[in-house]
Image (cartoon, rainbow, N blue to C red; front, side, top):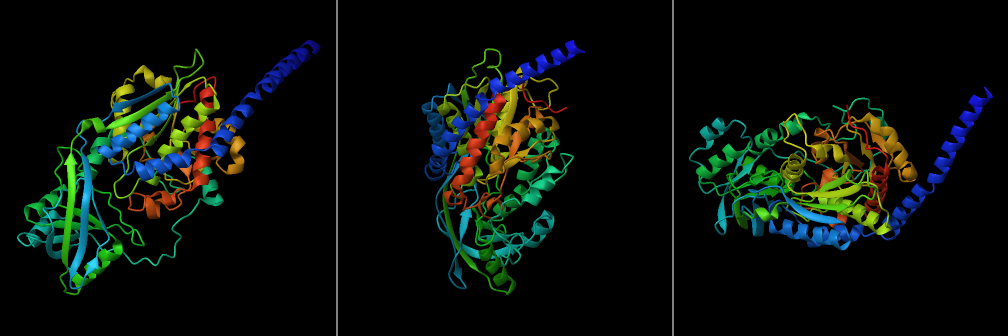
Amino acid sequence: MKTYSKILMTVFLFLGYTSISQTPKLPQALSKINTEGFQKSEVMNLITDLSDVYGPRLTGTDQYYTAAVWAKETLEKWGMDKVYFENYCDDCMGWEVTSFNVEMTAPAYMKIQAYPYAWTEPSKGVQIGDLIWIESYEDLEKVKKQWSGKLQGKTILIGAAPQQNMLFDALSTRYTEEQLKEAEKSIVPAPNKTLGYSAGTMDLIEDLEVVFESFMRKDDAFFAFLKAEGALSILGTTPFFPGVIHPSGTYNYKESHAKTLPYFAIAPENFGKLQRLIDRGTTPKIKFHLDAELYLRPQNNVNIIGEIAGSDPKLKDEVVMIGAHFDSWHAASGATDNGAGSAVMMEVMRIIKATGLQPKRTIRIALWGGEEQGYLGSMAYAENHYGNVKDKTRKKEVEKISAYLNMDNGAGQMRGIYLQGNEAVRPIFEEMLAPYEHLDVTNLTIENTNFTDHDVFDYYKIPGFQIIQDGLNYNTVTHHTNLDVLEYVPERDMMINATVLAALVYQIAERDTRLPREE
């Protein structure tokens, strides 16, 4: 008995000594990360450059590529061990607007708040025509029967009129403690929507091309009919109040895609007035022009990849990946979608490099192109490195990736992590995030979220995670709108996001084993 007790005591002392001898290492590392992230932060300089100088970053455009070069040079300046481009699309076209205007000239003058949808045709100079309203075009044969021969020289107002909105609901919010606790109580990954975002399944990835093509091409026949009938232009809206313009919804980005007539998103209030005039028997007259350029430069379509090399001889070939989509829509500067996520992930790399810490595993950043068109960048990367989507076999590189962390829900503060059904990582993340409990970033939910690039990694059974973030005004004001600008990016939130993620990534890279995979 005494011998057994001595053995237990020896083991206890050994474990205690080991724990005590190692504990100063992590606090010291986190202290360095905190000092660099909070006291020497560069994240707002990064988002200012991305937003004001290098925004917007529409897929396929020269401006996207110019921004990509800036990101690559910035990572190189910080001393990353590798920085390089990987092409993801050979037929994604660029589209840039140089001038446009939309106005009502009769029965009275009204300046129409508008922005053209991407990849639409330019007008042939200034055009003037009567406005007609086609409320629904789901039944195309019915539309043809009613409107054939009546659209020559007309501008078409399409869709239902937005319902009145008195703005009683707050435009900007943070998650409440009750919402986060409810999400933590979830016991299955899907189909929960506790925090308001979609609960994903892997079927989306396998059928991604079919799903997106079906979604993107659903209006092509109607638009082709309008063009064949000699219509001049199209006006549509999305009910973003007050006066927000939301021009995301055309996906004719490939060279093979038919391009629509000049097509403008307009403010819901303007749409409402035009529709009411038509209802009262008055025909508005619309004057407009759109100068825009379509071009194909495959060299513009690149993912930006950067690495901090691992230091452990046995683990340096394993990788902790972080990422965010780098492309944006075109009506503003792409500050919250997703300049904020890109700036945060770049700052994560800067913080870790600037501290002088030498993580055991390689840390790799990927700034993806073409996410808005269906994960084009991350899908191309995955198929190149991990194997074709529907193949049963996977390349060995899959086993080298310990985790992928993604940020793409605006500029709001990190509040925790969606576990994507991977219950085994919960205690690991709890321990890693514990030093930042005072910042309220430790909320974990088993739930899935989808519609961004981590879906791709999750599909390949790589532990892929999206960050829970406060919504702020992302879904009410900035998402894909003309107000996606720097004014809606809070500095404190950005600093917390970058610093906490740097600490989390560093700890994952230091583990003796990879993060556990989903069964």
